[in-house]
Length: 91
Image (cartoon, rainbow, N blue to C red):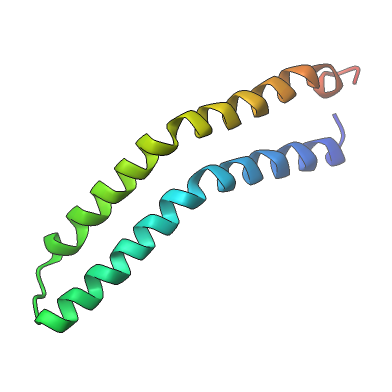
């Protein structure tokens, strides 16, 4: 396994991970922004008021996106297993 193969495998792995977590991160960031605006308007500075809705929104997003996430991971793993021979010592 040469450096190019290692870099390509790492790139594919990081890209897949980024694609999977992006929707949850965007939802968490959006809910955090809305909660910050709400706290600013109402002058409430309670930390749990901001954290709990973010956690619930991210968990709900992950539950809704679970079939897509599992399919994406299955495709990545299947592609990895198909190209396993080239990553071996004789590849």
